[in-house]
Length: 184
Image (tube, rainbow, N blue to C red; front, side, top):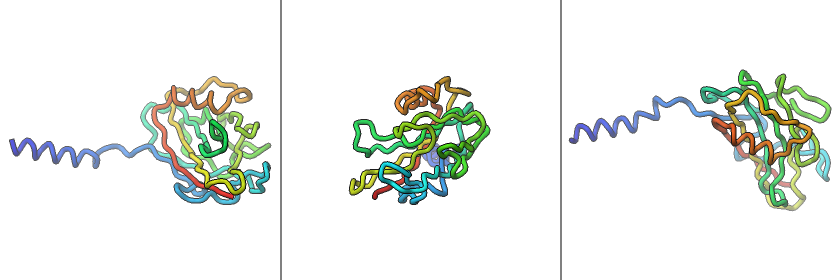
């Protein structure tokens, strides 16, 4: 009996060593637990940052991934639903990164086929951090979704954050997240 328990215990401790690496996201400009750089602050609504979208990379997507999506959401915005800063979907499965500055007003250097839905600023494309002056430090959740579908048939001109994230959650194989902080 002791021998069986020892074998089971060894198997339980050794299993994580042989497990596949987890789906994960990293960013040179949007670092987990750190303050976002000024260049990622919005330029408008009383903010005067560069409104530069972050560099994002991801790895170890689950088997069966057919596309990716990226969202940036501020749950601390003084609204009942937070604030959507960036909504990108239909990123081809062969991609594993987005370059810094890939999404700006009038400029789209996203992978071919990727679409951007309307943010809460009322425009498509990246909209940087812009919490109210003197408000609490806000959390910005950057999430990358691995999806089981090649394309979400959503019109970017009419797709909101709520509608897109509903579809992302319905079609997600996995998601990974990092959180940046910002206050002004």
